[in-house]
Length: 352
Image (cartoon, rainbow, N blue to C red; front, side, top):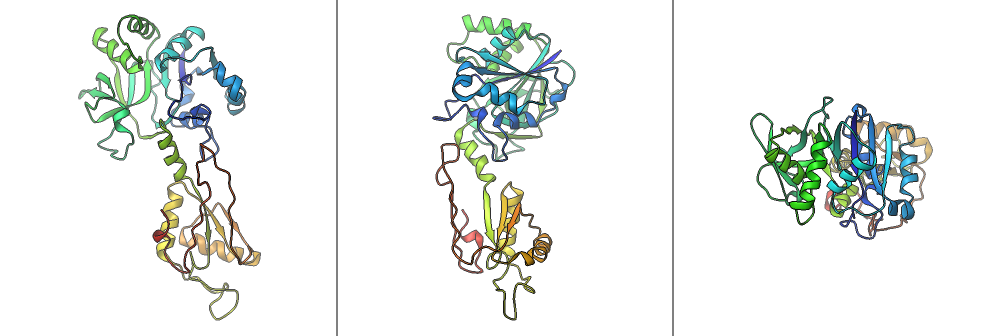
């Protein structure tokens, strides 16, 4: 029996005045918790347990939403705790007790994406990331750090203190529940005065029980542990409404020597900017006053340029275009932005 536990019974204090962060909607329409599960091979687990609070059910319909989201995944189980827990380690401990978890288990944070192959065999392990290889990793001081030897064995894990170039990504494997439960109970009574992290439990097991935790390096990592990081993620996926004439192509009209039927002269710098936006997750919607009869030729021009629009809106009025959109803490003000370019000018001079 192998179980995946995703603890979601914390405060989400870094996301004030919002629903629990794991319930927030990613720009691609999936919930954060769905995205958090995408990078790992969940097929190896017999059970997948998501632990939430009764409060989440009463205020946000959390249990119903999870059942709707994962209606086709028969492995998903929902563990409901009555009271807010003090830490992820307490959430895991109570989940093991309440759901009668036996055998090997893996704990995965609900607020990040990690691309990694979880071992099929039952073993102790920690998933990490080498920040020397990935210098753009965000929020480094708030991570826990791994000390790893040449044999890829974790010698220690230390919370929020930079002692190495390898950070922990919130995925922990245990070959059984006994040592986790015993260590949690012991440290809760004798060891840690403040929040008891899973890293504290593993550090104690390594140093006092002399148990081996293998280090596994992830291929990719995207952290959403803070509101700022989540907003940065949202910005990558902005929707861009981009006009054709005067922005992508040198301006022309329906009539004249150079017109919509024969004009293919592109503004190359703008094309590069648009391709960069779409490659980073941006959704491109092409807008134009050109009539529907020009769709096929326009699609060919855009394809040759390397632009792959989500949609093309043809036949728009030759007048101002106004975007009206709501804003909220999860889609903060301004949620609608207009950029008016001088004709045939460069996007990069205005796009921030």
